[in-house]
Amino acid sequence: MNYFDYRYRVLYADTDQMGITYYANYLKWFEAARTEYFRALGFPYTECEKKGIYLPVAEAHVNYVAPSTYDDDITVRTSVVEIGNSTLRFEYQAMKAKTQAVIATGYTVHVFVHSVSIHGVNKAMKPCRVPAEIREVVKEYALLKKRCRCK
Amino acid sequence: MNYFDYRYRVLYADTDQMGITYYANYLKWFEAARTEYFRALGFPYTECEKKGIYLPVAEAHVNYVAPSTYDDDITVRTSVVEIGNSTLRFEYQAMKAKTQAVIATGYTVHVFVHSVSIHGVNKAMKPCRVPAEIREVVKEYALLKKRCRCK
Amino acid sequence: MNYFDYRYRVLYADTDQMGITYYANYLKWFEAARTEYFRALGFPYTECEKKGIYLPVAEAHVNYVAPSTYDDDITVRTSVVEIGNSTLRFEYQAMKAKTQAVIATGYTVHVFVHSVSIHGVNKAMKPCRVPAEIREVVKEYALLKKRCRCK
Amino acid sequence: MNYFDYRYRVLYADTDQMGITYYANYLKWFEAARTEYFRALGFPYTECEKKGIYLPVAEAHVNYVAPSTYDDDITVRTSVVEIGNSTLRFEYQAMKAKTQAVIATGYTVHVFVHSVSIHGVNKAMKPCRVPAEIREVVKEYALLKKRCRCK
Image (tube, rainbow over all chains, first blue to last red; front, top):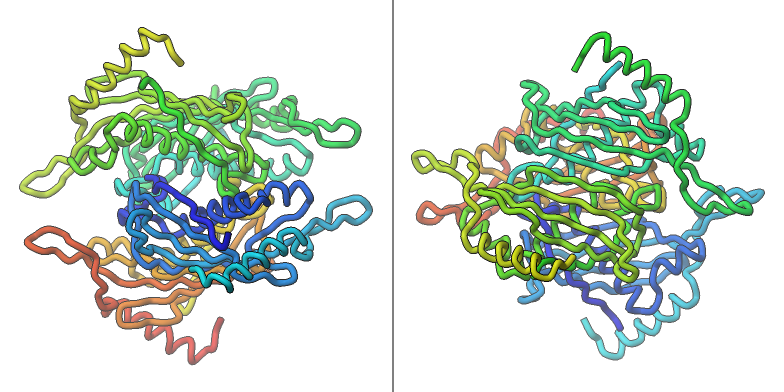
């Protein structure tokens, strides 16, 4: 699976007085999209946290191409496009579900961290290597991508 | 001090496509108001949490009297109106700062809880008594209120 | 249809540092639930607004029965329980989808309003009667409810 | 004035279960910061909208340098760093107010638009030139910046 399509219905809560989606809310949709992508890959993020591994955001970017409005049926297409020693980079494309017209594109960079304890007390979050099973799936995805040149 | 006035400027983020503040956001303002009230009383809520005591919300209510709009300068007047064995009840009155015209009233009920550990592992949050120093200040406030019949 | 079940997956965005859903976010889920309920009844709310009729919230209430946490699969059961001249009252029951364990109950009261224009200029929102087609469906629902004593 | 310092107290509402500010919320703080910056310059954004001119976001970026947590006292330093025919670019630096330790940097690009009406009906938002009075102030700021090499 080289990308995942997450569906979302724009809420009143998402809109602002300009009558369009408030710009910060796209980052929430991106979160939901990458969560469902990981679940679909067989690695629900909750499993990561159970092992004491967290995935905070290091960088986020959005290009607002066209507005979305209340009750719009949105698809957020997500994929992992880069994998470093301890980082992942996701890309997103938000589209009107029906027409596939792009409304926003963006990316987020995440760092795998785990809590380091000193004398039995949790002290801080330190970067750690991308877990092997995630690396594997993502590489497989990359190969797939090369082969089929999808997306 | 029998009430605290918290000032807030309505953001674009708060509004919805009806051109008014989205109804859920008043609960965020209420949170900010009770936090600043506690700080002003000398009990910042962060101190509670450092002692392992938390104050989750058990009940929340809002009456929307009149709309508020972008860039409105709002006062949220807050007070503790009831203190139980392990509960506190706050009341709120959101007003246009200039005219004191009421835009919303509401209340929240909170339960003091602390984490209970079994064999050294945190197991669950259990209700606990309102800390003595908070009870004291709140009682004092009640007396004040009787005397001056303020608010 | 005397109630509608809306499914929702709790986001990281919904949680707070207590590790549970922040209390204001239930009101967003309630919004999504009543929107989907109306769509299922055949009256998408967007159709209302196209006719210049809006449905702002006059009152909102939540009882927080048990916490919900990240990635919880939630059902919000919604129904209209009262219909006045210009008002509707919705009730909500948020449950863990699997176990049906209740995590929150609540209600919202809404007022139908339309914009009144003077000399061709929109002046203000004034309450108006509940549109006949909505009243009809809701009454039918009430009869159903009496018959089957569901919910 | 070549930058504006906006102060903000991190709410429980801002945090997530990692115990830090949820990444989307920085964009809300950026909004508040640029609003207050414009007010300080003498051009409250509400005045723009009264003239039918809006300033939607075309691009947003955040680098998350260090986490912020509940009740942190934050300064968001904001300035306009670029002015195009119809665009403005703001830069932001969020810092712990006391130590000036940077927690996030970012920027937003905005496009001035006005609503175009056909046969008396509002049809669409079209880009328009940056209003002269805003351009003037921003240029002056740029000169200042060159002179004092501030920031």
